Image (cartoon, rainbow, N blue to C red; front, side):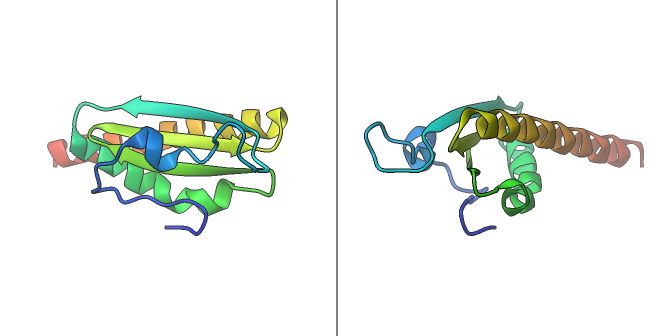
Length: 116
């Protein structure tokens, strides 16, 4: 995985502490943040989704925003950090779409395996 974001899909983490690098009063160019939590029916499904999202981290980040990705049990956590609200909205929308695509791909893979 990338330079600015890290994920260990097999690690169980304290999601809030581990990926919260937007601390009130801290010096940071990323003054806006949103945390998205996606809960799945199993740890395996969450791991699959997290692994599918991992290669996208460097591709979506830009100078105005970045992302942190983590997994805790059956939950995938995406934290978007941004310098301004426009970048926050764009980053959030992008990551929601990426999660949607990862979920659809995972479902297709399961369906194909079960019909094979």
